[in-house]
Image 1 (cartoon, rainbow, N blue to C red):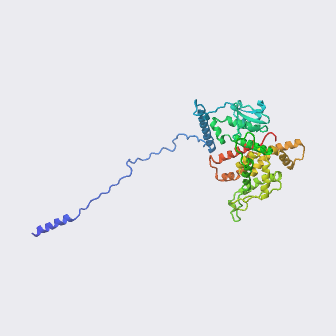
Image 2: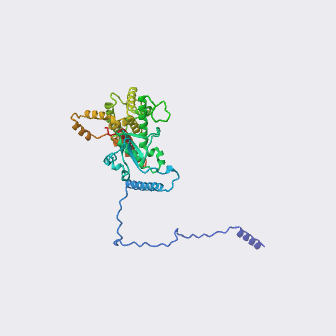
Image 3: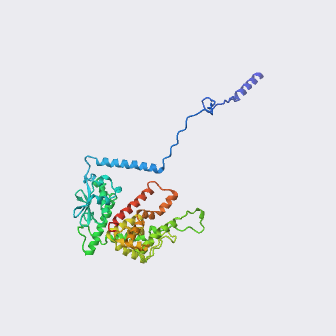
Length: 431
């Protein structure tokens, strides 16, 4: 009995005890492929020759190639648009074939004159075979076949003074490059035509003010302010914020001189501005003192003295219509009234005496022949000099940190384009 009871107790104890799991650990590789011993080649065994090194293409060359491809694509697109058989409207086609400059007297100038008036580098060969230049009673008129280019305000033919054949030829080239009449409605595609129209309107207003009569052939309502007043009101504020008069602040006294760039931006700005300001104050604005706008360290430019503003305002009021409009374009391009005035003194037709006087003051007291030789030797203040002076800070910064592609380079060329158009309007053959 006891055995039975003890046997049942043992069985109960066996059933109540948990079973122990036997775990076996096996080594397992992470990869499934079998290990293969390396078989290195002999050191003395010859191998294939290395490829020849190729020169890396420069960033400048890649940029030119990309722009060349873009220009070809644009040209193909324009050709495809002009080859359409039936345009959707008359504005999308070019209704003229030839462009030429005609005169009121109907005199056609020789091909030799045309070759001298229009440089080969500025005109394609296809246009040179089409263009003919003629002269009309003291004025050039650009014709699209038999239709003259008209002024938007007066609706009369746009007349270019006879002393400006380069401007008339450039306007004719501008119209010949258009592929449709719709492009003529965009002022940025015909910039010279827009400038010439503004100068022509100002000349009509000046003539009407001299005779106390309304401008002839003008159907537009007359306002109380003239174009000349608007231009003077626009240009005078640039005298306070002139690019040549806004210099970088001097470095603080406790600044680390080892980190400073030599020459500094301020030194370059002063060295560039002083000859231009000295020329203006001695040639066209005698006795005028131009103060630097930001020399006090403030971010708000200081205004010029009232006497200086009155003298400059009177000088602007006495300018010729074409010279004033050209000056306006130069000032808006360079954000500098001093730079525009310097360009006008160098290229304006009515400033020949100023240039001769400046040449004589420069040390030439000999005869006319020696004066002419010295004038040829002197470097004129032109597009490159004006563009360099107005973009001096940008060039200094990009020289240190690099330029942004398709931004700084485009602005650089656009400034030169606008200065060139201003010189075409200012200048002429009577220089």
